[in-house]
Amino acid sequence: MKPRNLESNQPSLEEAAEVRRRMLTLLHESQASHVGTCLSVVEILLAVYKNVDLEKIRNRTDDRVRVVVSKGHSAAALYTVLNHFGLLRDEELETYHQNNSRLGGHVTSTVPGVEHSTGALGHGLPVAVGIGIGLRNKKAGSRVYVIVGDGELHEGSNWEAIHSAAHLKLGNLCLLVDYNKLSGIGKTNDCCNLEPLKSKLESFGFETFEVNGHNQDEIYATIRKTIVSERPVAIICHTIKGKGVSFIENNNVWHYRPLNKEDYEKAMLEIRAGK
Amino acid sequence: MRTEFFKLLKEEMHKDESVFFIVADMGLGLVEPIQRDFPERFLNIGISEQNMIGVAAGLCSVGFHPFCYTISNFITERCFEQIRNDICLHKYPVTIIGTSTGFDNGLLGPTHQVIDDIGCMKILPELSIYSPTSLTSTRMVFTEIMKSRRPAYVRIGKSSCDIKPLEDGLNHMVVRNSGSDILVITHGTVLENCVKAANLCDKFSIYCMNKIKPLDKEQLRGLCERFSRIIVIEDHMVTSGLYNSLCQCLVEMRSPGTTLYSIGTPEIYEDVVGDKDYFADRYGYSPEKIARFISRL
Image (cartoon, rainbow over all chains, first blue to last red; front, side):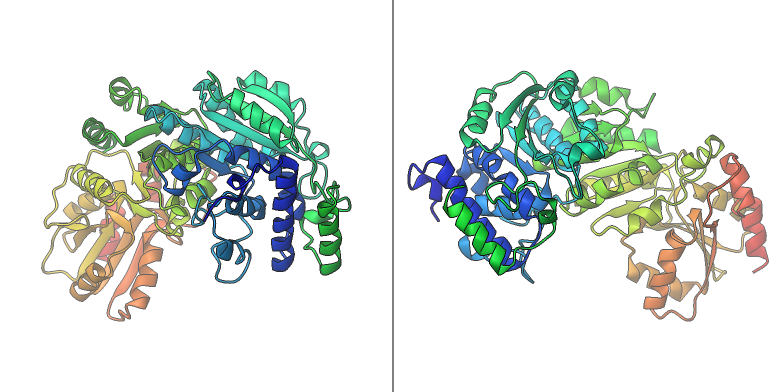
């Protein structure tokens, strides 16, 4: 099983569009929810997995880079990206959200390539801190990436972990925030304002960056330039929930609503057209 | 028992580099030797139990065997979902050590009275639960934990009881009265009251259930064949503790010849404070009240 991205020098925009098309097909065929949150995280996942040694993840070597997707409801996005990089087989991906499949609507560690099961929010970051401590203790030289949602940052456990990571100067921890500004039933910051998020994270002791979360090259470059760091790194990725499909963008009904045939076809046309 | 457990842990950390010890700002006068000898594998994470359990799970991903320590109710109930999702779901070998069990801290008020932790933990698949009764059983529990490498909760109270087992095995008889059909099954620090009661009324035997979950059904079957009256005595709500587990077990074993009794705490949170002897008397497991209960059977 060859990773698709290594077969050609596919431009990143086209690559993200291909992942979105496959993911929407998956979400439509399975009639699964969380369409909006899956669309917002695509470039973040692509950029992270381009920074890891895929063979080490495939072989689960002790010194592999760990990727923890804490916003577990973006499972369809993660599984599509794992498939894109050759870590998850086509036949298995197609079982997503079906009876008797390992691939449910939240990220599960029994799926090849997945590090930790998530779904209850606020769990991934403390686990990633433990991984970071362990990797540093064993002098593995590898990093741990953790992707959280913005609504998820309302969970207090994250701030316990952020405290610890900064106190321990966990330079091998890279936190990426999918900051799409919407949570479950409303705007994240109307519910409980995260702002000023960058200065909050900086004040806790994180080396913090803000990027366009749909510019894969910018996320990739920010990850590269922080690979060696004395402090934990946070990359706030400004994204659009539902990115790529005009009628899904910034509309929270698509947190829960599955794609019917008509909406699916319209969405696919928009993504094909590269809007 | 805690001193003994941490002595064993320190010895193990010398031998086994995978053992990692995390405390949530607890253990003054107990954990310092480990902190001194193993600064790379000791972490005071601060008062953040959810974070502690998540961190422990992450350490397992890198091959460590973490031990986590704080007061029992904080380490079970505050971070229940982390234990469920991050440890049990992943079958990670984290050992959760909870101290100050039952009414050890009864005078500190209802938030510190740990009488519902077993009920909270026993519903979790994969998690073994231990409640050592003595220094000897503490050593046996530790050995089993190191051998099994499974998720485990150790409910370890304040006691230095050193009674010797009368037979092999982690669960064992400590007082035997071969002429009686009455058996007391107990766990944790309540054993001391049971042994004192046996000095007041010699009508019964005492069995220590140092491992509360999973229950050994064959072992129980053997006990039911030998004893027709079994009294479970514990510093825990009877509705969700060991008595509750034995009720289910005996029904499933179709053991009609055994009558099961319970002495423990009711399903309430207290509106008064008191020390462990006060509550033992109030709920009928002081030595005198145990002896009286049994003498009237």
